[in-house]
Image 1 (cartoon, rainbow, N blue to C red):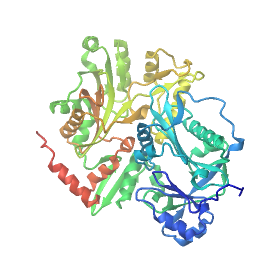
Image 2 (cartoon, rainbow, N blue to C red; image 1 turned 30 degrees about the horizontal axis):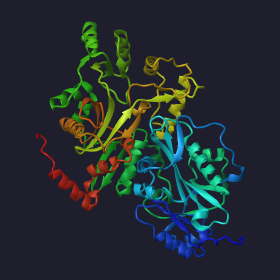
Image 3 (spheres, rainbow, N blue to C red; image 1 turned 135 degrees about the horizontal axis):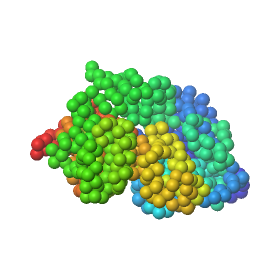
Image 4 (tube, rainbow, N blue to C red; image 1 turned 120 degrees about the horizontal axis):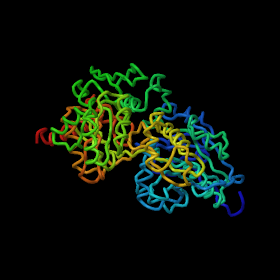
Length: 574
């Protein structure tokens, strides 16, 4: 140690809001390290990194701690080379407001990460040992991603002048390229300016982000991480799920994971189809994703036929758009078209946006749209097009659980790629973010939408140009979803619950076309008897679904709260 330098601090750790980083190399006594991990706060995740003798630590508390299945990677900042190009459509800056902190938490929740009290971020904004960067859309101001950095010299006078990267995350709905890389580079350059020698990170051994880190020059180093056995870490130390669990789609996995967390038996009967049987306390219920035996065949048949759904909810006072069938004749359709201005053509039966054409404005387009819809159902509905945004409301047990605006797929041009190539690239990112559940079809409806925007599929638009490529907002066709549960207008909630009661269905996704989620105006579009609950995280959709199926699996306090809430609800006919 050079003259005048402070000695490294012993037994060092730093609070990151979601848990503490415990610097294992500063602990001489493994028992003290164990005691430090035992002080972990509930619902938080402490991480002991750089543990010198992990086998000795584990031997001291084998029932309490485990060796984290993560690799440690290091970037030598002395050999770092800046990027040749700059980010497109967004920029990187430091956290500056409480709104930034709330946006970071939204991204953490969407990525199933432990969230942080927003005031913690705000208190740390001027800290010298911890730094937060965010990626901001240069047009909308939306926060697209975040990364946290820790300066080891500031924390414990690290003689190696190290630094570490934590909590790199991007919004799964973001369509911009290179968000993660830009955040990592900004953090590296921040620490270079402060004289750091290296930047380390810990990443799960099977995380696809490893490819990005290796591309940027990170190399594996032989350091180990120890964590405490808790509910958050459970999947890391209990071993992999059965093979059939991995074969389930994300919508079924979310529910099965919540059931097993509560001690409810889950038997997967058909993984490919999303079927599983949940059993608890002598009660057994067969499900297909969010569709269960509690939904009657009558309710299913109402949802299955959009014309029947419309009549059912209209009779309950829910506002619906005008509609006719395609066999009304050209004269009637032409008059309807002239009056409405734009039409929606869709099969009476179908799901996931298949066969739907939006913004049809000529009789020839109506004929083509009807032909496309008939591929899915012989009965085709023609409906006035209501301008606005697509709002999905999840109603479980006749209560709103989640609300989200669904927006149609769009692309951002890079000045080099054709529209078809941009769509393929966007689809690859959507598949990766949704477990293969979302992609933009290269079909006639996409071509028609692109044409209406003034382009052809083989055009190369100017850099930065945003182009809508679908008119429907279905997630399966590349749409994105944006949570609005906290701001949705009460009249929209009332309409959704009224529709659910009219159908008499315990779990349903109600689709409304709205001018704004915060306003009362709407038009009912359809009801989905098997809504994708995984699309609405962090709202507790899976929890409320399992509550419905097995109320006795709820904690006693939660059951009492639910009973009291039901007592205070108005009668069905009020």
